[in-house]
Amino acid sequence: MEIPNSPVNSPCHSRKIPLWLVLLDNIPTLLLFVLGFIIIYQVSFSWAIAFGTYAVFSVVWFWAKICPYCHHYDTFACPCGYGKISSMFFRRKENKSFRKVFRRNLGIQFPNWFVPLAVAVYLIITAYSEPILYLTISFVVIGFIVIPVISKLVGCRNCEIKEDCPWMTGIKTERE
Ligand code: SF4
Image: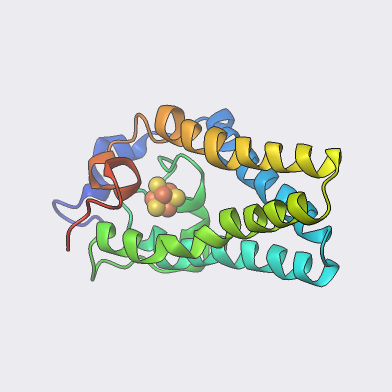
């Protein structure tokens, strides 16, 4: 059923993001999780499993807590495909603003970046080896350069709702 004046009825939401862009958005993130798992595995297999489980949980959390409030929910206009996946498991929600929900829940993703980084620094200090160094460099390049650059310059660059998105407009300057 169409909702009058709803952004979901906007013509831009009939747009279909090409598969290459969906892959470009997801493959580096998957690679980040794999590298994070390998880094933590150098310390403990159990911790690596816990990290992998958390990474999957954080993505499902994103589908459950953020995507249902987004204009791209249940459309092919979502640059990473989450909007469609979210709609298969979670119902649309409109009782809060997308900006607030995004800001409140994005932190669930931070451990995916900072826990492996902390473990990598620990390993470099306590058990330095060239493979550890290369793993760390790969992780930093993908997590802190490649993923943000793809989001800002490709995936989210032409998004019609980027003005509503704290990721594009600056999380720190967000107001209630
Ligand atoms: S644009 Fe972001 S918040 Fe919106 S549906 Fe896609 S992944 Fe979810």
